[in-house]
Image 1 (tube, chains in turn orange, green, yellow):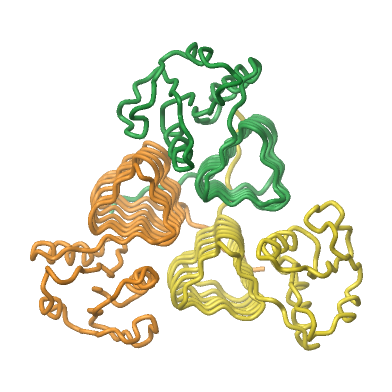
Image 2 (spheres, rainbow over the protein chains, first blue to last red; image 1 turned 45 degrees about the vertical axis):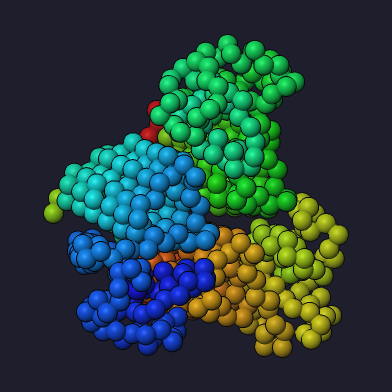
Length: 206
Length: 206
Length: 206
């Protein structure tokens, strides 16, 4: 398990519920605040990974992905280049169509839904309760944040971030490294590196 | 199965997962791009339906419903008038209260929720992950799109469309053929044929 | 069961599905319109509660909580002070991490999700399909309305109301008795007693 923060703890919870063993947590930070990691070896340097043979272990990418944070993708590319394989994680209560395709190293968390004819790219996160509708094509290194809704036939390029509870209408295309903010509704295609913000809410003191 | 597009493929996925047999797909368009339909007879003309006796087969309305598209309702009315019955479809992982009422020909898809005291009209779609709260009354020929949220005691007339991930507050009444856009939040009642749009998001290039 | 309205009926549906017995409904209003309560004793005055010994029965707080309605909290405090215990209710299809903490008298309804490291306070409602992500701290007497989404590490004070399908970004802090309106996206911390409204949608007649 590379990473010891919130995303790593949610993945650990899924894996342990499936009876899987986590051999070690690799994180520069303390993990002692998280009881879920109790009893698991902790290494603070990435160098520890190379103590394990790529034929003996699978890696889990427990580093999250917020807009324009390159670390998750870099870790994935560095260790796959060295011959390591990243585990594909599918929560037991996720709903994945038999006619969907989930690439190696992708992660579909609790109650995520991937419908008929949809494709999920490698190292992509379909976070808790997110919905990827029929015939969507989601490329590699995306993060579809919790409860985001992608209607039918949405396509994304690499490195796209769709914020929590955002809504993407059907047939929309989103290019590489674009960002849709949390709670936004996207009704048009989005260019490379673009960010789509909703008009933010106002506040009223009562 | 009338229709061979996205909605039809999602319904087929649900039915086949329940061990049901789909005898034929009726669609003017090619269905060869969709592996889920492999091995199922394909007829391009609606006339093919009448080759089957209404006592031998049930129809499935696989035609979707976007705002102001009359086809789905027309097909339903045409073939029920001829004595055919449309199958009621309830996904195995939908959550339907024992105290809810689901009319003939309604479709509740994957992870849809219909709570205590709610009523769903004939030929209405409760799409993937949508929530119909307690005591809602949803009339015939509605489409409650994916992940839409209807709070308690919402009532709708016939032909209403509620877009993906829209939110309807409690006790609201929506009249015939009204439309709530995807991602919108509706806090007041909506007249016949009205469309409710949210203020759309702005874009910012970074 | 204290209360005989919509919230009470949804709780009754969950409890009866779990084979639990509801001895009586306490409500000043008629409950005859709700078939789910058929055959259950009905008392119109709160005084009826004291006919039952606090060692023989558990109470269920079936009174809902809308912004600034003090009744639910008052009932809870009044009867716990008298030695009664309020039942903790967790729907059978809710998803609760083994590393989450749910306080006494909290209610997690159908398809609610509480992730690793999250804490839910006493008498708090996590309503249908709501998501409380990893490491959130939700204090007592909150109502997280249906399908609301709280990202990681959100903290709330007592008496907070988060509206249906609202989105709260990660690490945000919401102080006592604050309100987030339905469908809103909250990107900053919220002071005590503050209400956060989204810019409301416009309407267009077509």
